[in-house]
Length: 498
Image 1 (cartoon, rainbow, N blue to C red):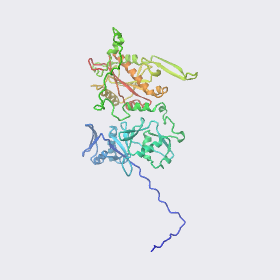
Image 2 (spheres, rainbow, N blue to C red):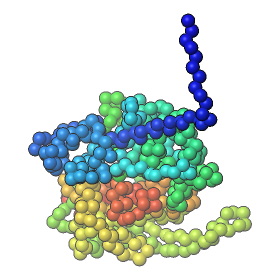
Image 3 (cartoon, one colour):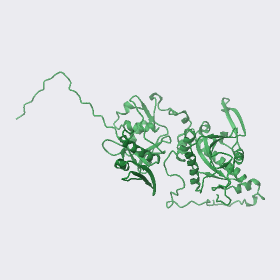
Image 4 (cartoon, rainbow, N blue to C red):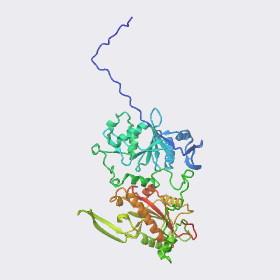
């Protein structure tokens, strides 16, 4: 038998709709990276082990030990930063120490599920910040951002960014690619694969995304900084990824391909064909310049008992780097039109387009007649101008140089060759950074020959730290930055060279 149907009396009022449940924001977890083993003992003493080395991290209160061990698997950043209790301050201090040492990474974990992204710091001390975004804001990918495969991972990064993002959810990559053109937050968050305001805020804070006027079409190449207009993508990437300070990739002489590829020969195999013998045409006797070239070698050990003198330093800089002449001429486009007046100089070494964009900064360790410190060489006035540097920054420069040379001690003077990038990029497209590096090579040889002629020793160094230079000088890394280094001093007789 059918059940009796009941009819509800109409009241004329619409039923109330329950508000949609707001999705919980994903948690941002801090954890030590896979290269680090964190040990926190019952006494509160904390330390890290990396490649067999032990690094002390100080102590915390015994009551915080269990909580601190959470950094091994992942500890919510919001649970201790900003600190609300004394115990939070202990945990945050430990986290900051780990971050400064480059031991932390961060994971973005939804309320339900596994991590969708991991943040790998590329500069020491990186701490995640989340930019505030309103529905009315529009965001777009930076023209310097790129997505690549690294092993089995997708990595989103930028030479401007202090961190890279390892995307573990492929849907994120597809959603982020939609930001190649500006998207308004209010519309973007309605998309099926919306990545969430937390991730967008992290990307904006890292300069991988930037806020843009939707009417501009995302073509604002300066992205809020007019000095970026002159940079080509590949040049800025090469600059940051071939130096220390703004990338965390292994760097230097690591012999990474031993066992995979045979050592390349020192001398190229001869081409087939009949050779033309040139031996008979070599100059006899050798000219003074040929003799000087033969005497040039890299000197890595310096005589602590006989430091270089200020007079010798002044002579070397005068010989190798001083401005010899200055002039201006209108820019000639070759079609009868002229542009603004351009300033030029002449110096002892050649430079692409007579740009002479290179500047010399001297970390003075031991020089008779000159106080220990950091100086800029003003090549126009032929003077040294002190630049304020903290003792630990000066020590970091000198110790890194001795490590790079595999030398027993620091050089008497470390010359950092920096470039004013816009001086070259204002004229040259696509090849600006390449030209700068060629100019560095020419200047290094000039410094070598000048030092050799004076009985001094020198050694070119293949690495430099863009972040350390920026901290000392206050110059943003993309405006003026290090592109070469040269150790200088009075060499020890019989020391190894090359």
